[in-house]
Length: 381
Ligand SMILES: Cc1cc2nc3c(=O)[nH]c(=O)nc-3n(C[C@H](O)[C@H](O)[C@H](O)COP(=O)(O)OP(=O)(O)OC[C@H]3O[C@@H](n4cnc5c(N)ncnc54)[C@H](O)[C@@H]3O)c2cc1C
Figure 1 (cartoon, protein in one colour):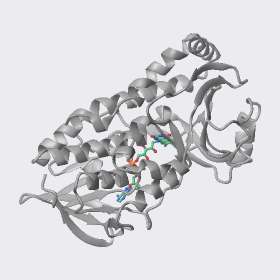
Figure 2 (spheres, helix red, strand yellow; figure 1 turned 120 degrees about the horizontal axis):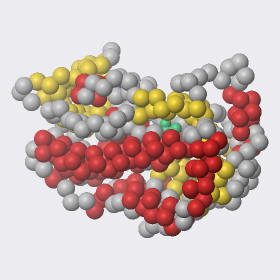
Figure 3 (cartoon, rainbow, N blue to C red; figure 1 turned 180 degrees about the vertical axis):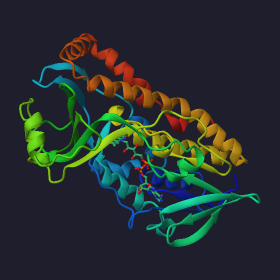
Figure 4 (cartoon, rainbow, N blue to C red; figure 1 turned 90 degrees about the vertical axis):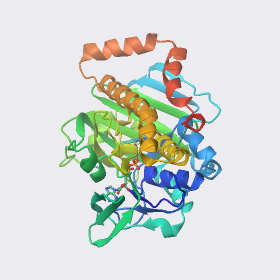
């Protein structure tokens, strides 16, 4: 495509910002990013960034800037609530498997985007495509703008998706998640997921003695923790689990809670001059820690396709053709992992734990290999 193509990006999350940087990498600089929030900012807790996504940041020159913010997962365990190890994986790739605070990753990406491309406080209202070949974008309480192409990176509740696919609200998968960051006295490089009955706790290293954690529980969508209170509830549920789990909650300054959902994989991400990226296209439950990684891979692929093809129709079609199968697999495997992890019946829990403890660690590592060893920067478009 012509490098002067005027591109609008809706959403300034990790997907939207990575897309801006990959577009720059391929020589497109006539773009604007519109974010609904009054400032470009991320909240939340830890995010795992696996080698498949880090390869994109290495290629576009952001990798080195991220190093000070991450902790490397040297060994990841699956344990029972009493601490018995069911399996152990040591990621060994050309690049590390890392975790960092979402806000740090977002801030590093933001620093690399020229400020005049950033438009905060611009919630997309709707868009329309004109026959003469332009996309007219309307914002709430802001001036209308016109683009050659519009890229929707506006997350799981995407408005752009509603105009393209229109599949309503995400599907709640039966469990909520609490997340926080705590200082812990455990070896750097420690990562674990601990399985109980209808409940799990995960721990990942961020940097120094800082660890990200999450805890899940089968319950009603967005069920309130009141009147018991979040801290007391978490201690009641997980206070008797193995070290260091009982120490997570008091040590965390902010604890956030969300329902977990996804959407069924759906083809047809593009309509005319508009396409989708990241959670807007392929939202997944976080049971593989690959949602943002897929957005990062997708950003590279979409930018590469726009660079390679002279017609946007071909670029969008090839982007979806290459990215859809991979994201479908992540969504489905992640959903399955979540179902296994959230099993509640004692017999099924015993069967699950027995099966996982019998599986050779090498096999567990091999099952993750297809996600981690993939190099989107080497894909021929
Ligand atoms: C609990 C949990 C843990 C996770 N852990 C991991 C992990 O460890 N590793 C991993 O890779 N992934 C993980 N994920 C998935 C990851 O968070 C998402 O896949 C990723 O954030 C998607 O990025 P995105 O930019 O597509 O969407 P988002 O991060 O949702 O960003 C969308 C942006 O668009 C903006 N926006 C929305 N609507 C509008 C509008 N109308 N107009 C303008 N702007 C708008 C939003 O304000 C937001 O800034 C996790 C998800 C959850 C829920």
